[in-house]
Image (cartoon, rainbow, N blue to C red; front, side, top):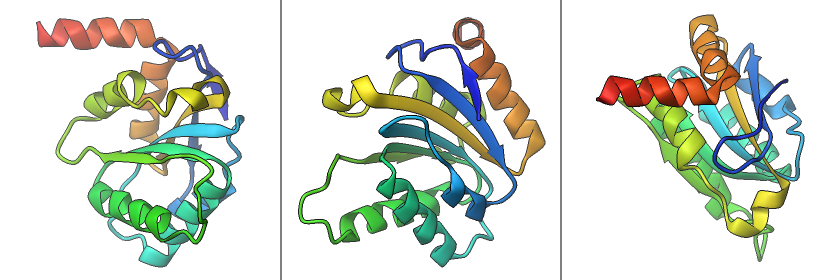
Amino acid sequence: MKRHDDHSTNDGPLYSEIVRDFAALADLRPPSAHTVLLLVADSTGVHTDIVSAVAEQLFAIGLTYLCVWGPGCQRVHDIFDEVYVGDSRSEPEHSFMSTWHHDEPLDAALWFFLHCANPDAADLSSTSFLAVTVGNEPWAAAVEHALADTSAFVRRILADEA
């Protein structure tokens, strides 16, 4: 897991990681009690049982916010929501939010992750922001480039919109 500068909006630690396949997400060990996760993946061929198992594991270790980008992202979003709602906990330890970013460029999903994906205020003091790319080197390089210098990323996005 690579550590970047603190999150530009929330001053939380910002990390990135690349994993070989979707199932490897279950082995993630985020560095804080709560995690905002940007998941960059082509999940079209991933079996529902694998997505559900990953969701259960990530919830168990403090996933509070999920942003999903890439082919099949809406399905992954829906499965995570179903696992969270179907959890047998009587009172969830923390709230959970999720978004999917279908038909948006990766930069738009990164922008949302950096500027809009904010968990409950009570969780911010122990929240890390983690962007994980599944098995796609060009996508991972784009994520790394954006997170290596979030100020430059923001300037580039704003200049592109002007």
